[in-house]
Image (cartoon, rainbow, N blue to C red; front, side):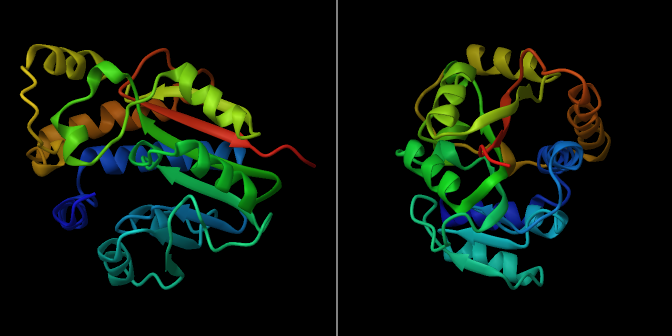
Length: 240
């Protein structure tokens, strides 16, 4: 991402409905399926995920120095600069890898998935989130330097092709799918770049949007959601 986007994320993510709700869902899925262990947050950004999930991830890696500085500003110390396709991590040395809204930035996403598979021990877990539906590609995706948005079948094929067994694969941000799709389809795409993160909604709206997204963690305990703006995939490296 651009330097400006990292600076913006550092300013707003702790109160922005989307970042907070995604974290609530990720925490719920990890708590239900993944034992605590030695873990890495890949593309840790400005550190909110790493700071919030110490039972599962204690190390953070990011390609951008500004992201690592922002993470260090939260008091986090186990940080290193790395490309997800070439992690300076020994084979089979981790129990958990989180990779939240990262794969869409990488042209060679299959190489990144293979690298996550390499560093996990047999039986280890990887949790991915990505933006869904290519038809939703917009100014927001260009502002964040997204290479793609994913189809569900395409993400499944990539993850299993890397050797993983999929434990859960579900859409998330389900309640807002219809309004987001309507805006994307009706707004003319003139090729501009504009991040949706640039504006934090005012208090009550921020709270409503957070609740509509975060409460999805309850049905996700039982079912995979049939549609949504993003995809969540929990995968396991085969083994004991």
